[in-house]
Length: 283
View 1 (spheres, one colour):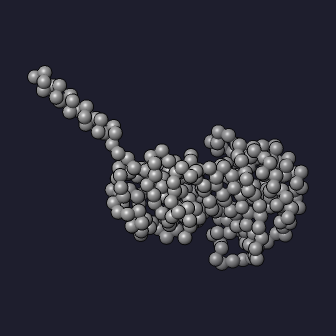
View 2: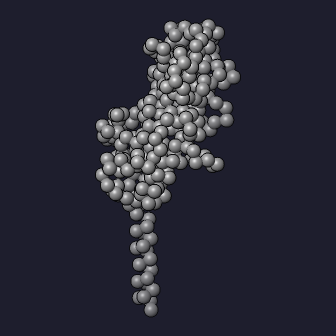
View 3: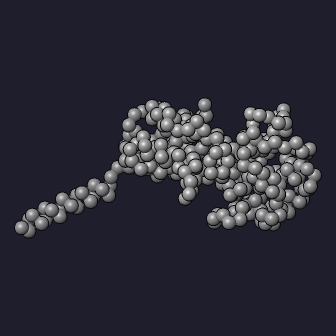
C-alpha cells in the first residue's frame, strides 16, 4: 500500500512539473491600422472597438486558444499607426503553418483597417513595449480641403510661420521634463522624456510635424502640436514656449489638436532581438 501511495505521489508530481514547465512560444507582430473607428489601441471594459480587442479575438480564433497581445504603446481614440509592434504568447512552439501563411490567414479574418505585415518567433523575454528604445510620431495638417484626407489629416487654413514653429520645436531637444504636455489623470510614473527629433516640414498643401523620443506621455504629441501652432500664429515667442516647457503645467500649454492627424510611424528595437527585415520594412 505504501508503494502504491508513493507511486501515485510521484505521478502527480510529474504531471505538476509538466504543467509548470509547459512550453510557451512568443511571437512579434508588425502591423498597421487606421484608427478612425476604434476607441484606441487598448482593450476597454465596455467596448470591443479597440485594435487590441480585435487582434485578441482573431488570434484566439486562428490558434484555437485564448491569446492576448501586448502592444508597443497605447494610441488614443482615432489615432493611426503606420508602424506598430505587438507580441503574444502561445502554446504552439511553431505556428500551425509558416509565418507568411499565418500572416496571410490572419489578414483574411482581420477588418480592412488593420493589416499585419509580418510575424516572427522571438526569445520569450522579448517585449514589444519595454524593449522599444525609440518611437516616432507624425502629425499631418492639410492646408486645403482634401476629400481623401478627412480622417487622416486636420484641415487648418490659418496663416502660420513655419520657421518660427521649428525654432520653438528645437527647444524640445533641450528639455527633459514634458509635464506641460501631459494630460492630467494619467498614470505616468515620470514625465521625463528624451526627445531627439522635432521639426515641421511643408510640402505642397500639407504640413507635417515629426517628433521622435525614447518615450511619450499621454496626449504629449497633440499638446505639443497645439502649442507650436499657437507659436506659428504669432501668439507665442520662443521665450514663451521655453517658459511653458519649464512650467510643467498643462494649463500653460496650447490646446490639444484633433486625433485624426496623428500617426505612430516608427518604433526601434535593439539588435539583440534579431528582428528580421520583414519585421522592419513597411510594404
